[in-house]
Length: 308
Figure 1 (cartoon, rainbow, N blue to C red):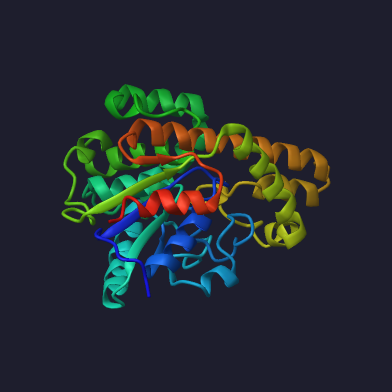
Figure 2: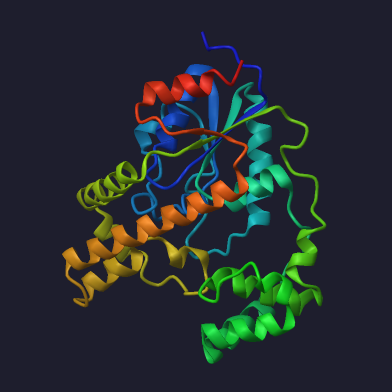
């Protein structure tokens, strides 16, 4: 018999290695929930280990949707995610389960709860033109050109953010309108009108760093070197090229880095990524319920107290 709840959906965000997947699974088992992925890297089927996707054993304990359903060689957008999430939500409702959206991608949560701009599809030719222009000019000069043409959108971006600066350039080229302007005209969000329980799982920084380091050591034991070798030919402009650890592990295989050097770089990059995630969450999710406890049983109890 499942514990009763009075919400329509649960949202669990948190930094990488913060424990959100374990919390989501424990909650799903308690309330008869189904877990819908809200992480932009765990969608890739060829990168289970590097992206720390739930194990097959975990997936057998509760329905998991939108994990490993996309090839690393595909361009996957927030718009496509929202369409996939809508289909998943319908499936969960047909199963009479409680949807539990879980992941670390703030932009996906933002789209689910705040809506997505109805931007027309960008032609492949314009995407390629933008990529070649950035490659020719370099990141800094490309960003300055974008800032001169679209100062409003650029004010929210960093020159080194390849994916988002290219996106802003592409939208401007394809539509003649700044991305920021499109974003002010959002569609109705998927979760509009639903009663939501929204949580951020945020362990103390020292604990999080220890977990990040330990998780990478476990990944090595699970075969992440072999997995990285199968991800060698991903085009640089695709989102999957940014999978944490891929580039460093390929450098080990090419004898450009020692395994110890690569491990240090990957762990440091993962800590920086977690820091950026937490900055987003603090800025955009300050009104969510923040849970900083370390014990899974306490985290589960804290979440359940907000579901009645």
